[in-house]
Amino acid sequence: MKTILVSGGAGFIGSHLTEKLLDEGNRVICMDNLVTGTEKNIQDFMDNKNYEFIKHDISQPIDLNEKVSEIYNLASPASPIDYQVIPIETLLAGSYGIKNLLDLTWKNKARILQSSTSEVYGDPLEHPQKESYWGNVNPIGLRSCYDESKRFAEAMMMAYHRVHDVDIRIVRIFNTFGPKMRPNDGRVIPTFVKQALGDKPITVFGEGDQTRSFCYVDDNVRGLMALMASNYTNPVNIGNPAEITILELAEKMVELCGSKSEIVHNPLPKDDPTRRKPDISLAKQQLGWEPKVDWVDGLKKTIDWFKENT
Ligand code: UDP
Image (cartoon, rainbow, N blue to C red; front, side):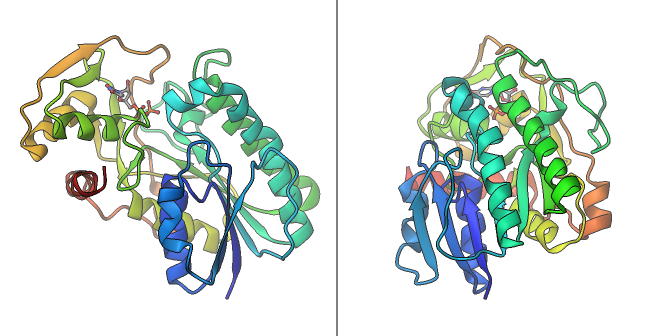
C-alpha cells in the first residue's frame, strides 16, 4: 500500500483521481483549502479508513506527520471565472504552493506530479500543440495569473529536478469535463448543461468559432496515473484531440438534453484562445495512453450526472 498525497483532492479532477487511487488499495491524504473544491466531492470517501482529509492551503508551509511516497498536485483554481476572481491566491498556489510541495517531496524522497495546463501555450500560434511549443502568453492579461503561475510551477519543478534530483512528472492537462464539475464553475460544459437542462438561453461567447478539445475525466485520470508510473520527467500533454467549435458544442448540448433553449451570443472575453488541440503523440509513445471515451458519450454521462445531482 502506498501513501499518496493528493493536493486539490476535493476538486473536480482530484476527487476522481482519489476514487481510483483508493480503489487500487492506496492510502490517500487529501489536502484542500476548499476554495474551489467542495466537501460534497469527497463525502463518499470520509468513512474509508484509508482516507484522510486535511483542510490546508498549499501556499502555507506544509508539515505532514507521516511519510508519503507520491504527491499529485491538483491544487489550483482552474476555471477562468474562478481564477480571475482570486488572481493573487492563484499565483500563490503556483509559486509558494509548488515550492512547499517540492520541499515535502525532497524531504520524503517521494515523486511529485504537477498538473500543468494547455494554458501554458496561451493563444497558440502552433496547431495542434506539441510539448516542444513554447507558447504565446500575454504576461499581463486577465488569464496571466493562471498561465504564468503554471509556467512558473513548471520552471520550479525543473529547477528542483536539476539541482536536487527531485523525481518529477509534469502533465499539461487540456480541457477536461465530467461529473462533479461545479454547476456554477463558469466553464463551458457545466454552464451549457445547466442552461440546456433549464431551457435557458445557451450563452455562446463571440461567434462560437473558437475551438477546444474536450477529454472525459476518466481518460484524464488514467493518463495522470500512467505518467506517475512512468519514468518520463519532461511535460506530457493529456487531452482528447477531437477538436470542436464552441457553437458545435452548444448545438450538441441542445440536442442531447432535448432542450428548448435558444443559442445566444455574448461578447467574447479578452485573451480567449482561438484554437486549442493537443498533439498526444508523446503520451502514446511514452505512456501507451490515448483517450477512449468519445466526447459525445462523455457528454451524455455528464448530463445524466447533472440531472441527478444538481
Ligand atoms: N464559453 C462560452 N460560453 C460560456 C462559457 C465559456 O462560449 O458560457 C467559451 C469560452 O469563451 C471559451 C470556451 O467556451 O472559448 C471554453 O471556455 P472554458 O471557460 O470552459 O475554458 P478555457 O478553455 O477557456 O480555459
